[in-house]
Length: 320
Image 1: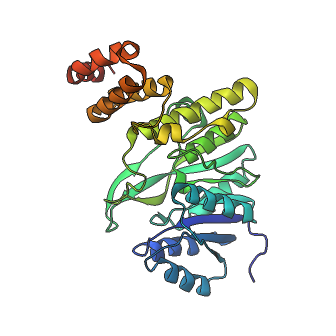
Image 2: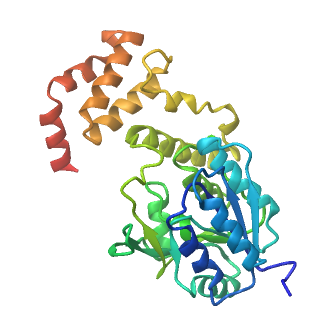
Image 3: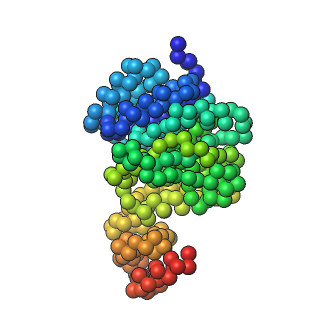
């Protein structure tokens, strides 16, 4: 008989994953730890994904399927995660991705760890990278001590999102934090004094797909949102709250739109990111927009840098 109050709630938002979804779901259902519910949102898949999930749900009552009426892109994805968290009955939330595979004792190891350490709030784990045919092609290894994670926290994301298990006390993702919703979540937990731990165990297989750039290759836009997440963290530390409610994500999402009015500050930040990442094409487009909106006088040094971009970038790389 199914436990009405499972210890863990596994959450999965899925869209068009028919090739891998059966194997991925099975890796959850076949866990050595069995006291969980499995919440799945099908985000209006147009392939055979939904039928596969429905078949699995008929075989295992731990699966709770939620169908969405409309796919809303990134904001819909975050909405899905929050919907499942709000419906979750578990003491812990375990995040899962549609094309990844958990090792069979993933939940058992993490539940044992967090149950025996009352000060641990979130657990993460290393990953083995696999390709489209399940061949091992690499590893994802992050710092595995709290001290090392803290050093990394305000520079880069120190955790593996598809592996996390955290205490279910009301934390949800923020919809305006494009490309960095999980990093923003970690930083909010961190600013609240929560202890987030990455373990050195390899507890899942992370699939790398040739077409896995579902969010696009907008390096500069991603970096802007990452910087904003860090900025929000500092605001919370200084004043107890951040300015998220006033934040307009279009200021970053439309940074390359010539017609969209951008602040000088955002254009300067974007130009700096374009330079340190060596993306000349983006640098030129951003500079064109900056000159159009603010004139040459305001961006003289960036004009000069543009003339010697390749050489300046090579020097920067050597000194970094």
